[in-house]
Image (cartoon, rainbow, N blue to C red; front, side, top):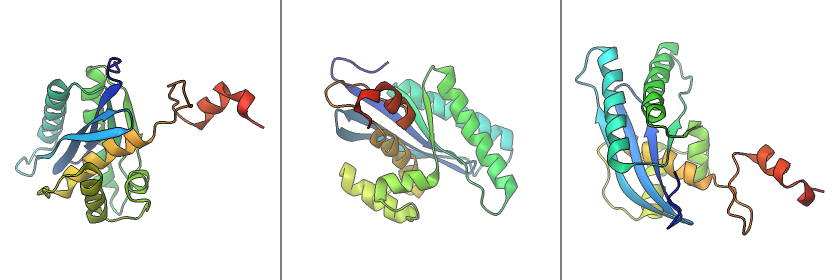
Length: 188
């Protein structure tokens, strides 16, 4: 679904959460990225976990319809101190994924450490450091009410940065193994 004429793609980044879900949408044209939108979906007013999941599905579907992304990148849930929190985050991520899959989008997942490393060069960076780097990179000045918005945007930017392309061919690879297999003559 890549927009061939202008070699551009739209990436939807999601930072799943059951209280606040962050999202960011960017347009990639060649090596340039441009912010289209970032924001949050608040669910703190909902008491029922299943209503929260329904809201995540509906808002993610709405973002897909509005921006018509070529792919979706999500932050993977991580295990902190409470397994119940990870379970809820996993459900939130799964529902967001389901919305993308229902629309035929390719889905990509990145660990929080990978996202932070891609944006700041430091896998242990704070949310504030990630937000500051995104402001410089994408040249926006407004500070979102919730850092979940910049976290969602960071996942989209991280995905954009993952392109591995061989010179001149314009072919992208999903990882090192695919690249190595297709470029055995270049290996020593």
